[in-house]
Length: 81
Image 1 (spheres, rainbow, N blue to C red):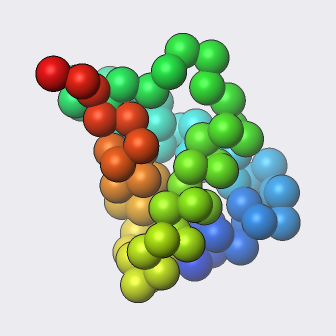
Image 2 (cartoon, rainbow, N blue to C red):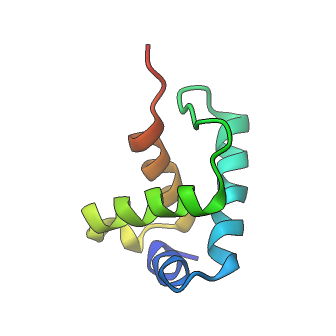
């Protein structure tokens, strides 16, 4: 799945969007310690962050979905030093 697919599914409200983003978020949380996603964030909240990021960077929609999610979360939730 690329960012274009993810954008389409999220804007349509498909559960696949939320599940994909939550799965990618779990992997990011496990592998990285520089992204601090607020406790209690849900699929809808994270999907809104990802869709907003894709609207700001439309050329990135051709990237793999997991990279879109990673970059969106990194921009939105970088840990404070």
